[in-house]
Amino acid sequence: MLVFAASDKGGTGRSVTSINLAYRRALDGDDVCYLDFDFGSPTAPAVFDIPDVAKEAKGRGLHSYLNGMTGEALRVDVWARTEHQVLRSRPSGAGRLVLLPGDRTGGEFVTDGASLHRCVDLVNALRREFNLIVVDLSAGRSYAMELALSATAQTELRSLKTRWLVYHRWTRQHVMAAADLVTGERGIVSAGVSLGHDKDQLLGAIRFVRAAVPDLGSPQWSQVPPAQFAWMRQCNRELEGIAAGLGIGRSRVLGSVPLEPVLQLQEQLITDEDVLDSRIANIQTWQAIGELAERLADDKHWGLL
Ligand SMILES: Nc1ncnc2c1ncn2[C@@H]1O[C@H](COP(=O)(O)OP(=O)(O)O)[C@@H](O)[C@H]1O
Ligand SMILES: [Mg+2]
Image (cartoon, rainbow, N blue to C red; front, side, top):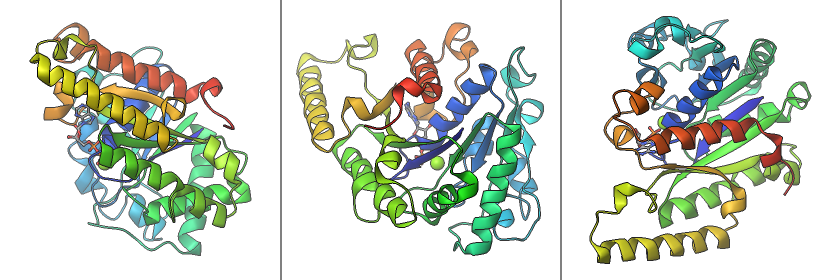
């Protein structure tokens, strides 16, 4: 399965949540590779806690591969290379977890026929080795997004199960931007259709993920003054209304990850050790990411609308 992680804005939680998703699918036994197509701001090495990758990827990362500067994109075995104490040895029953880093270029690249072919070749090679390929796209209507849509429209990749996760934060601006990225002008659907995708099929393969959402039912918020709590509940209701009105209400949402103090301060993987032993992270965050990881692979949550 191929999964694209997209968002209209930066700072939505797309990378950190997707990396946690990839980690959880690998813990569950999937062989997972994670492709960092966000060449402007590659965060994956930091989140996986592999500090040397940025240097190593120079001239050998995905950007260089797609531009034809190297014949093979660098692969980094996360279990073997991470400096994260808990991740150091591959847990029993876990699948492979491999990062294909982007090389830091400070920006975008122009896609041409040659880079499209290289992209299709790469995905075709990876699908033989991995159950799950997660691709983190850069924010907005990017070249990376266009490349993703062009590649999956090619006959070689048509049979590959492909899903799109569109991330957004739980604010009015973010909700509107996420809806627009999918159904707006030059959005995923219109760009996809012009590249040869079937509209309904493409729409059926897109789900939204709400990230860093204050969960008003959790104990974290029970301490706030009553007036503040009442305002938050009212705002929450209004946001649900806006999302539903834009066609990104609950039936289109794959899951919601609560506002997590650890992630507010640091981009990192949330491990069971963080939740059960050191207790620095909330169990609700662990559960929400687990639920997302399950639903990602469960056909029941996907398909034509
Ligand atoms: N559930 C969450 N709760 C709190 N902060 C979060 C959560 N998810 C992500 N963040 C934080 O938000 C910031 C942006 O996340 P990131 O994944 O880098 O966004 P993007 O890839 O969309 O630009 C990071 O500092 C990250 O740690
Ligand atoms: Mg990112």
